[in-house]
Length: 378
Image (cartoon, rainbow, N blue to C red; front, side, top):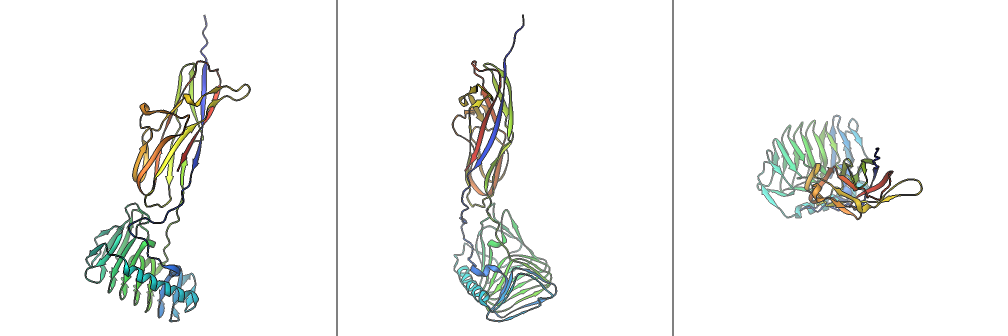
């Protein structure tokens, strides 16, 4: 006596949808100092801009009310020179406004003159001695927040030592670092400096020095010697997106049985540059149907889903699975939460490998059934 066992094969086709949130402005403790049109300049001075050697400047050079810009060439300029013209005059006006804005910021911490050997997080720092020096390495830690703002205020000078470095970690950006200097700034040779210098008087950039930011003096001169000055810009916000495999084979089973399989990695990537990001990923399934005529259907009420734990995450925040274990599986005939991020800071991502199970009805016919599982994130 022969017995025929009827089996069914199910395929799941995954689609993904991402609802994009509008990038928000920085919600850190401090907002950036508004530079206005001064942001167009890498070097801006009141009297003269003087260069010696093969300096490279990326961004405009401006001077006003003075008119002299010398040393280009041999210096290389990736931008334009504005000598007491309209853009220079407006840039200087906006620089003065920015300087006053920085002065007016409420101090969050009064610190020692010497900054090297320290790590600073977002805030407004004022020198206890009226000057700032950096003899070695200063580290600015954004703690995962790309909008973190660092403002340093001194009533007198800023002096950095030879071969000193301003380091940026955990998402800190040069565009959000500001140095308000009550008189003049002197940057040591062979060093790396980051941030926007807003000096009341003058700025001397030492030999073979790299500036990732801006050197801007209201009343006096900016002097360079075989340096690299690159106007800093903040990274452009990206998107909130989700990805999943295009297809997955859930396997075969007899009538009354269950097919179950992993869909493959599902990943949410959040590159919106938000200070406090949150998101929710959801999942829902269609009915599973056969091709051809007549069409046979297995209802999506027979489909259950569980996300399982995250296989990998990046960034700061609390990543929570909608269904951590098989015991938490839910039917996906309606939209279910797959994963969430709360208490986030800055860019982040999460990946998981979910499982879908389908109960085969006793009334089903032998065939290949295909359904669509849709992941969304917002």
